[in-house]
Length: 276
Image (cartoon, rainbow, N blue to C red):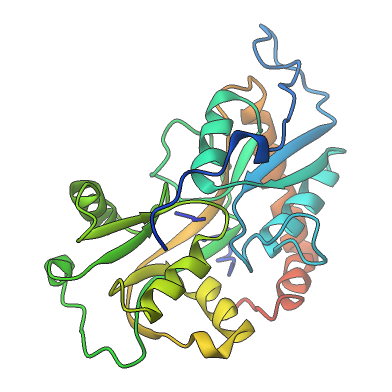
């Protein structure tokens, strides 16, 4: 997941190839009555957010800590009287279900990579994309052309950086150069493939990878280079007529939580801070 965002005051917070996770694994979220309505409904009582686990930004749905972006979104929407449901699925499926109107929004989107979505004014997190290789790797990143002789792992539907995204698009039909991973746990699979030396390099968010490697120190990897930094946002489906209103509620809630210091408290609960 990415998954493929800064607040107004700089919020720190943004195997073999397998088949996409089966349809039956996707939560069946009923299409809201507002979809297809001629007049927007301003009295929405609940929304559904979807994403693959990408902790600490957004973690496993229903866990004790669902991710700082989910916590912030829940409290921001609660200020408008809106309840938030958060569900997990592969990133590619989350994006498609949002496009089709089965979920209201996706969590952790990069502005500019999904122009068909509706973005709030304020970001809800921040992402730093780095390249990782085997611990004993002597490879040095010297621009996109230095990837030419390597096997790059990438997660289906993720955006990393404009330059790397273009490289993946151009070479995704050649598994010797770009190997696309799918499903709900592609990060663990990518780490496994690197350790098995079946692939050479993998792009991932620095905070996501650091958290994963902390949980299992035996999965040690080498960070080769930081290639992109970007704010993270919650992107709303254009299939819902009230998405602009929901985006505005979220932005207003983020500003209110920022002003009270609540966002700092939420970040601290994940071991994060404004200065990270």
